[in-house]
Image 1 (cartoon, rainbow, N blue to C red):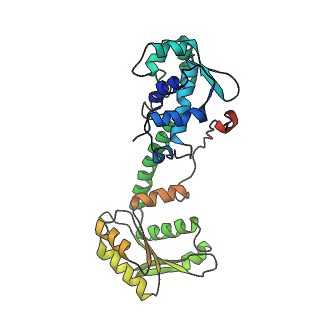
Image 2: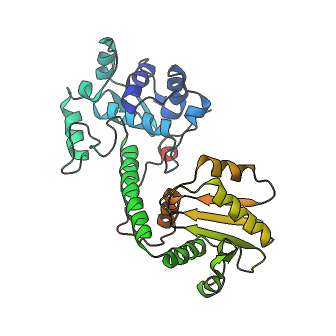
Length: 307
């Protein structure tokens, strides 16, 4: 099942703290997960940053309950329920939401302090992502949106370029990814147009122990199995075992199946979307505009697990 949103974890967390005892988040987390019916697969889910998604959401549930005065710290890494928290539970709510917590002035003060100027201060997390997202998830959603827009711009620029520019771009990308030697060496291996279906050859390593054969098609129509099969035949003619077929468009299902069924050689298909992603990852045709260093709380520092 899907991991509950952070606000959906607030009531289960408060209930487990309802005994008035001192609790630690690492020890209470499995209990809340059990109540939510989360599977090991659910609990292994991570954000793009590598942070565990469930732990991230539960940690923010605890932060919000604490800012509303329903939980209070006892010592480093531990907390317990307050009288206000007990009153919340005594009201037998179906759930605890941000609207529930907004009845407390100190919680509204917290929201106003944490929301950047111009963002929606009624949610505390702004509007960049889904209203159920934690700040980290909102940030990642915003980053994904910016990256997707940039990818479309990059691909449009590639389509507007000449075929020879595209072939050189492919070599630049392969070099940026760590293949081949110098740019001069790579350029010297560019095959003539129509040379047996091969557009370029690049060393797999700096010593030239093996080679990768390239084909680059700046197309708008999908590349079908016939084109990929012809490329495979060209590899055979050159005695090659490795090839990369790059297009600005897409590959048909039959082309993808053909590559999966090939056993005696390795052919990698890169469509336009993946091409743009690789260009952004390896700074080919793009340049960093601004860098934000996002820090996260070191839960292990603040929460000491006990046996």
